[in-house]
Image (cartoon, rainbow, N blue to C red; front, side, top):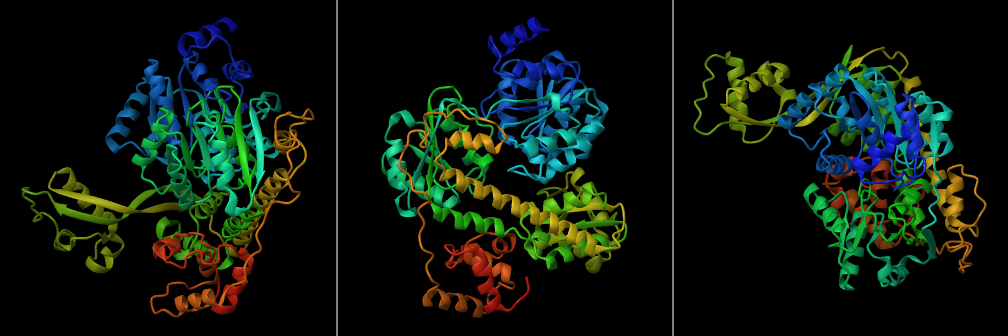
Amino acid sequence: MADTLTQTLSRHFGHQTFRPLQREIIESVLNGDPTLAILPTGGGKSLTYQLPALLLDGVTLVISPLISLIQDQTQELKRKGLAVGHFDSTLNSELRSQQLSLLRKGEFKLFYTSPESLANPALSTVLRQIDIALVAIDEAHCISDWGHSYRPSYLYLPKIVRSFKPHSVLALTATATHKTASEIRKLFKIKTAQQFSSSHLRPNLRFKITPCSANKKDQPLLATLSNKENLPAIVYAMRQEQCEAIAHLLNTHGYKARSYHAGLNTTARSQIQNAFLRDEIEVVVATIAFGMGVDKPNIRSVIHYHLPKSPEGWMQESGRAGRDGLPSLCQLLACGDDLIPLENFIQAKVIRERPLTKLIGSLFEHGMTSKISPYHTRVQLDLHVSSLDIILARLEVSGYLKFIGTSWRYIWAWPVAGSRLDLSSFSKIIRNALEHIFNLGERYDTESTESDFSVTPNKLWKTLDELKEDGTIVYKPSGWFWHYKINKKSRDVAAIKHELLDHLQKQIATEMAKLGEVQRIATTRACIPNKLAQWFGENVSTPCGTCSSCRKEARPRKLPRSTVPPVSDAQLEAIHKLLDSPKNRIRTNQQLTRFLCGIPSPYLRHYWLTKNSNFGLLSKHHYTDIHNYAKAILNAAD
């Protein structure tokens, strides 16, 4: 086997030797053993499933949450002449059908998709029909409650993967604590002996901590970037507007810098990423959305302008520097003022009993099936996207619900110009509904069809599909409904509610503990990378010799921190003016607290309150203090 592995490595990937643990992981996979690989960023995780894919009979299914990684790897593998396909949200219906047809015919050795796409019935049906040699699950820490980027869509993976009956499973991550690794092994039935863990330490990375007050961060940032050896660079910031401001600062000082964040459209983000890969941009100033799946080995520095949210995030983001093995800098501009917004973001995720009771009641009060509009549910109950997803995923994993599909809520339809639209064959009530929709000139809520025209939504959609197939109309649907089958009736809503509240509260406590650990490491006198590695359970004692602690750089015991200013009379007046306005939309204590702390939520975004000049008016204050203040002046429920 050894010669075969080396020959395959050289022939298809252009390397003569394996990186640490790659061979052991590949051999475990080829033996059919469920395997967990914990390799650092840049440690060559992708090779551990790409190479076996060429040697195994059947297709290797790669599940990744990173659309950019899916696109980059499929393109790169195609350039190498390998048979690779993918199925994700970037494909239109025609391309999806083409990919599924080729997959069914056995035309691919590797097939990439996302956890969310596995909910697509057409894809899951094909995957259950074909021979799957290996399922590789990238970013496997996302499955764990204790992981630093927990994703509800990963909760379904163990059950879904088992239904595909693969010959082997490979879970991969760059950052997993002992607790996270143990949970991954348990969920995918991986023996401890088949866990391969490389050290999180990379000797070419120098960790530097620069304590500074909030208004003096720009000087050390500019000083670091003035050394050309620290370019190209990624600067991580907390908010979108901060990314914009920092990028503007760097441009005024002559750097080729661009900001990257979720507020940019897909095309703009792709252009920035590609320009950075081509070295046309020296510095990308980004939220943590940037960097995952970006294969740029020569990043010379990663600078955290604000404190990271967790040791895992700190390590993973820093690991994007120096993937070519050359000396690189990982710098943290450490300021205690960053703790308030980070703590506030965590505390703002707290779900109150009232909205949770409403959600559970709405799910279980409609007999054996139920449907919800995710957008309207998030807005009406002011639940963060991830909070609703976690609740629904927990209910499904616990056996209360089963997701059975989606449907559209809104329709905007019109006849094709020049076509001869003949509605005479339809009943009068259908004709009335169609004529109303065609003449409306805006979207129509199909939930109103029964009260407006005595037509069920299903009947209306079936008719619209027929007309569309005939080529006589065009329509644009919008607004998802998620449909669920009720597997077991909940007689005790209170019990489910308290179980969910307890679970969500533990997540909040975990996030707060991780942020506390970041603060402790940022002020440690011990070797910084060793302290980070110890968080992941590594027993290391030899100092790195290059970090701020090892170099004995002078640092205060506590991070620089401003005094929280009192709420001024002008701020109080602005708040009361907002609440007294006839256009005021703020109804609950939590909405007012999030608004004043500058924390976006579905409700605040829906009513454009995040654009109000007073949004974030008290962002320098603690969330709990503002929540108590909100209760005092609003006297409303959460």
